[in-house]
Image (cartoon, rainbow, N blue to C red):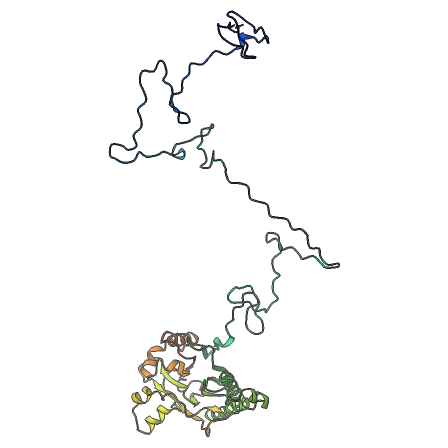
Length: 451
């Protein structure tokens, strides 16, 4: 086994334990008995780097001094400084050390909030407030009952009777903002347009049979007068009343033209009835006037094409093959039409005037003497009747423009054709409500059905 080296005291040395003088050759201190053989040998190490600003003592064996590092390099640029994070560091396992490894936090821990002197106690008998439900464990909302109207914006909130979402408050589109209906032989589309806040147009389409069993198809379109009170109610009441009158008269064998005349009178009565409001309502709104609207309708029955109208809504005839002439079947009850009929202006001048669309005939309690207009036609070829409000014909007023706007397959696809025409008006600016009904007319070959 190895042995520890025993060191004897030298002359003039002192005891490391009690600092008493030692004599040469002592192995133990005579005062305290300190074992002098356990004293470590002095180190010959000399510092080479200045500590605390002190200059290092030169090592006895050193033959040269370290050069002083210059502040700038040979290009007179400052010597780049290296940070500890610039050096690659690895863990003992060989992997890279995380960027935050070795950092020492020097920020003090956050101060604890001061505790209140008193804690409020709930009133006797009061129920504690429920804690908010954990969304991870909360049960989903129950499925709304069938028929519940959901918000078009958030798709989850229910719509209240006033038309607003109970969840996000979004106003819902009204039912009449855009309407479409299609039967076997007629279709109609109505849209609010791009400028109006509501749709004041209305339509009614239907079909029935004449006494001989042949079909009769009906299309009624009404346009509420915006300057009147409740124009949307007027157009709806007029379209329904006219349609019901025709469905009652045609199966009884009434001539379609006479039936149309009577239907316009029935529509007028329905609009007039809206003006008979309670006296209290008139007192609260003294500036209200009578509801009013225009009307245009068409019947296809027994090989006849019948139209009737009051106001400036129109009906156009557009043949399928487009080789025959396109025709406007109605004449406007308007200031411009009167100027043209009187020979005071040509059509271009009259309709360029700002008074052009001022109507001279309408349905309503304050209308002038009602003059329903009716006309019958017997086309010699197949085609379609375009029944529309001025929201469409303002963008296709001339018959040539209307013929170009109507799709060539309108007789086979009346709903699609009505959608295209409404889109034509919206693309043109959509300044007004727009309503279009497409009613196909088919020619029965001579002798068909005979024995």
